[in-house]
Image 1 (cartoon, rainbow, N blue to C red):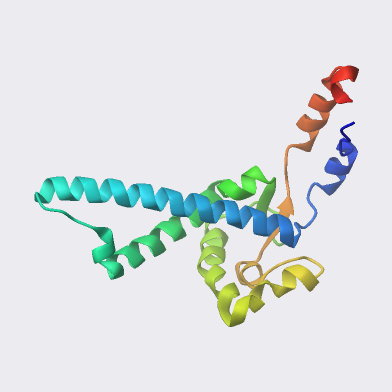
Image 2 (spheres, one colour):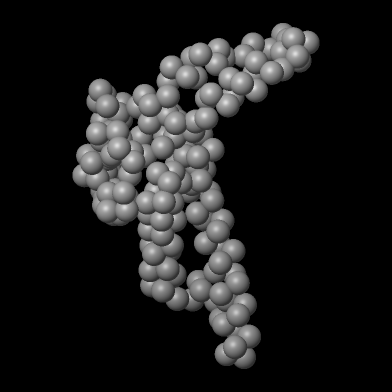
Length: 172
């Protein structure tokens, strides 16, 4: 027999600070997505440039250019969706949203500051992530610098309505 989590539990968690495991899983999804899209983009770029130049071009032969391109792509991957909706692809899948620390919607300025500060959390063996585990508001160093917080924000009401609309024999 399959047990379902109570939809009222999901509703109760709306707006609460997201935990370390959920945030790590969202970042893992983002890292895989970012890397995959970059690899595809680099392959397309290599193909087009090789065709235009009439000679073989390999991004791996230009590590400085590749590093700069990856840094720019990473910045855009995180900053643009955060500024637009407060979510990256990974956080949207796991029902997370980045908001201002006062609960208001994230604006482009704070999205950019948070994104630029994100690498600082990795310094000194990731000590900037420690406040997620021990802090009351579960805000990492880059959240403090960007004046942001990560909260649960999935569409729990719609999930509850879908759950209630199921036939009793489908629930068991």
